[in-house]
Structure formats: C-alpha cells, structure tokens
Image (tube, rainbow, N blue to C red; front, side, top):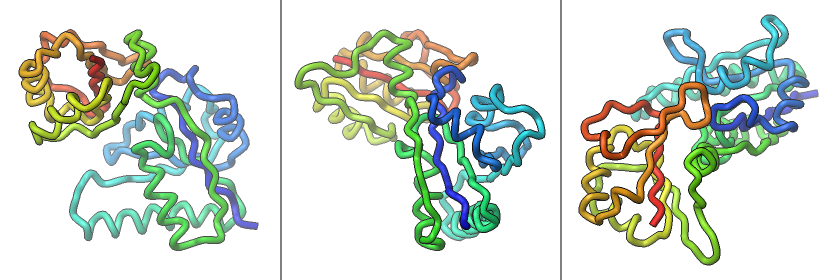
Length: 233
C-alpha cells in the first residue's frame, strides 16, 4: 500500500484557526512534511502546528524550497523534494504536508502536488482547505471584502505602476499579496488615486507576531514577506 499525501491548510497564523479536519489528519499522519529554512529555524507553518505536536511523536520531514528563479536550481531542488516525500509514501506512510493559509491558494503545495502526480500518478492526494491570510486580514481589520455584486481581486503586487492602478480602479476590493518589496510604489498609486485612507496593511495576520500598520507611516518601511494590503473602496 502506498501512503496518501495530504495538503493541510493550517491557517494564517493563529493555531486556533486550524480546522478540526486538519487537526485530525495532523494527528493521524505518521510523517509531517513542512517547508524548512536553510538556517534551521522553524518555518511559519511549522510554528503554527508545533503547539499540537509532542517532540518525537511524529517523523518530521523538513523540505527546502529555494527562493530563486534559476530553472536549473529549481528543477534540481524540486526533484529532490518530491523524491524525499515519495520515499515515505512508498513505505505505506501517510505524509501530511503543512502549509500556511490554504493549500490551493498561492501555496508551495500546488507545485508539490503537480510534480507528484506527474512522477508518481499512483499516489493518492487529498487537500484539506484552510483559512487564508486574506480571510484572516478581513476579520482582524473588520473589513467586509465583498457584498452584493462587488468585484474582488487577489493580486500579487509588482512594480508595474499602471497594472496596480488599473487593478484598484477595476475592482471594489483588491487584496495585494507579496506587497513588501513594492510598498513605496503601492503607496504612490494610492496617493495618486486619493485612496490612501481606503488601504490597510498587515503582517503575519492573526499570529502572535501580527503587525497592523499605520498606512501613513509606511514610506520606505522594511516589511516582512508575509505582508498583504487590502484596498476597499
């Protein structure tokens, strides 16, 4: 028997936002796979589930995902990662891959799932949906993302001024993820549209490291990767 690969969405940061089903799969699976930082510190997803795991209770499988666009490095590292997971699955062990947010929304698990299907189509794969940082931000900020016939967009922020401007103009609400590296450009867009007061920025939402920023104090700010912006007109 080949083990099942589970993609577990473990929520935006608060361990209490783990679903009952994700918790059950976490406890039932003998192997917990998680994104591992090269320096050895715990990943964000690992920290979320850590409160539910007793040391030594599970076989912990740390997987390194390189932050690069070099295709040769990506192919090599991803190949190695899939093989590490397959080594456990072929022994009949279920593997729960934990990912912050939802496993099918801008998640590392998506590429893992696709490569596993391509190489080992016999592997059964299941996902358990999780609460995304988008939902977490709406709750913490007290912002209704949509009602009635409102149009909502989720957009990875980039340095294309016109694209970012058009996205805001075309939708009632836009959630910009990966906003940290282009925060100054985003603030310029908002000022030009006279919508600065319609925007909110939050880092590591719902976690014990959460920061809800004052939008007027963000010029040239150094923001962490897990930062998003909500623009609600």
